[in-house]
Length: 143
Image (tube, rainbow, N blue to C red; front, side, top):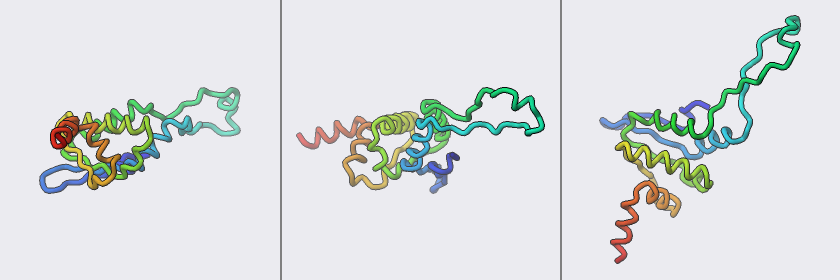
């Protein structure tokens, strides 16, 4: 899957902005975990017995989730602001933890994480998990 399927880069005013689709990222993440990977095409013909004589080792084009999310963070290195879309896809446990970690790392490097609509409790929970000061502000406002 091409990164353009879940990351859309653009410029707004003088800022570089990326839209992160959690839905499309989830589909790619599930593909990484499914065990189904694309193998390299084998070379040879039926007339060429050397390649047919034994089964060669399978060469797989794949990355593990850790290195995949590290590469996504590297792609976001020059981005000023990240808009997180399709938040309902973060209901999945391990996927949610990985995305929250990605967002926290992006925020720690000085990036701005934007949630376009903060209407659901899930969006508020995720925002609070990457920005602990929001929990403190909520506690102070209730006391």
